[in-house]
Image: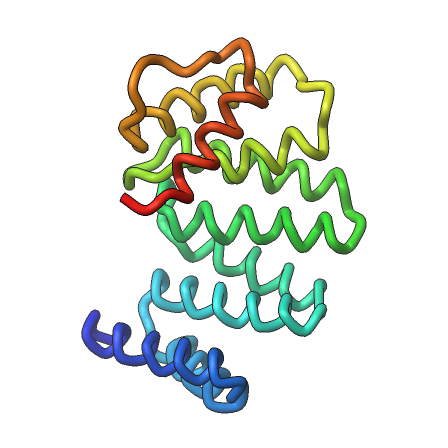
Length: 178
């Protein structure tokens, strides 16, 4: 599938889903799953996983997000999104340890990213599940928050001794229009 064909399929999927026309969205997702590249299939699975999540179908959402993460390039924002989404549905399903593992995976993806994006959401998610930050997580969080600070072009230096406060600042900064 060419990138132009994918972009058109994506527009149709989003339009249909936003109108509540799940059948059309799912038909176009299926088409991408049959003929798309690995990355296109991964992105289509994120949409399908999100549709399952909206329907509170945590297990199918989880499975789609996991499959998507495996298809998407390491260090990509799309992979980060899939991993963060797995963690989120695991939280909703009460699978705390699995959620922690996926939030860590999202943080690692951000730390190795090839695209500029903030990992503040994954940092917030991990810290909310693990209030007592583990030693290994502390350095990963510091690395991701420092990188996110640069990505968002914030002035000065982040306070890496206050991981929670820095995460809050990054979350607010990332949600402001530029």
